Length: 259
Image 1 (cartoon, rainbow, N blue to C red):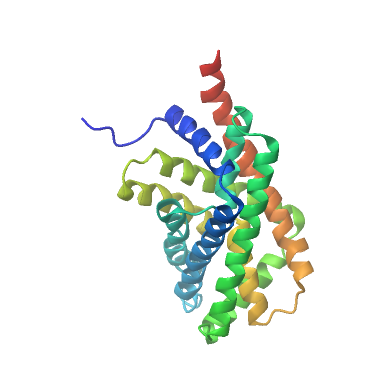
Image 2: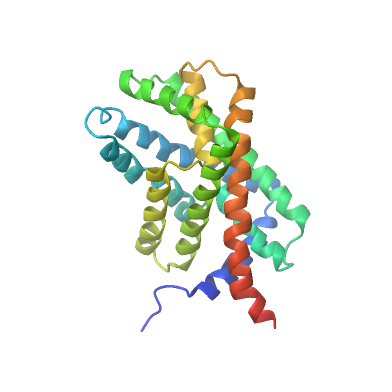
């Protein structure tokens, strides 16, 4: 009978191979795929806003659930259509620990992908704002989301970001285990829905949310946007997605195979 999924130890090996491939991508290919990922995640975030815009007066839990229900389309596009997402690429530390890539290659990829993700987020946020797609409830919600994220303390944003990318890289991990598109969609959908529903902080999604809020009228400067949210969230994402999850799986699956 055909095997429909990979075992965790096999996923670890595939993740290392994927890390090697990502590290060897040219600057142009990396940036283009990263820009696409920024747009993809922003599309899911925008869908989240549109779904939630009129539900706050009915039920907050239902509002968050329905918004979280559509948000995962962003990572589905990244995984299935192909793109370079910073938070998912945090798993490249598994290849680093296995000595398949160098620290310089890792940091080069992270820098280019993070930059590309930001460019993609800005492009989509500006396009939505300039084309006047946000009206009344949606506009107010976009501003409210931005203000809420910028009101977090450094510690709050950092811890929520750890929890977020802990789940996001597990979604990527399970997507790697899946051997067909339907399985990849389901493997990606539920973890991402959970992180959005739980209120965790994702650096690339926040690039879109906060850029959209800026274009929609929030008074915070770009410096405040970076210092109050994007920097602590990025650091937290790295801890959750580049240290905790790959660290555990390296010790569990890779080290024993080397002995």
